[in-house]
Length: 264
Figure: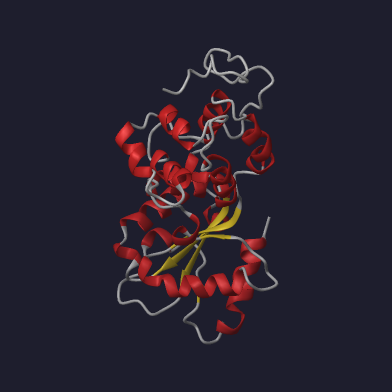
């Protein structure tokens, strides 16, 4: 049986419910940050430290026990090439999963080496974006073109695209709310007939509109990129639309959109 952390040799004494004296402590800015916000670079570094089984330092199995995983669940995670990565994915769906809680558990396990190594990277979170892209999966090809035109050119804008930037296993509603409200300056809405049928897109649009009454024109940018059989959504009619279907303005479409996203 793994010894209790308070008795393990070489580990700092623990204050009640917190890390030991002299241990790095979670910054207040990350204490309640959802674990889903932990970027892939930090996750990969964490795996390098914890995937190694050693008798002198707590590994990922000890972390799994502290997270509340049962014996059979831990045995199943052992079958994966990156058990630490899979552990984080499994844990982030639980109510108590946050970046701050992860740091507390690492301190409790005496892994101050991990905390010292990763603290600078964690301190840079959460990642910020110029715009959250609200779109239906059927419109992904246009979104990919948007990435090429706005991220991979001199505009160097940073877009938040769910299929690329949001990790699997997260609650789509809660992570979208977090991204739209706190980590994205604006939201681009790709409007199409498919968009009108999407409950997820409907939620994201209404949530963004509710955040800044009176400033919708600045926060939301609707895009019409192909002909529609259905009526344009009434909730967006009062906001100026970027119309990709208009041949007269198509040549400067991306320039106009980039300027709109770059405004303070």
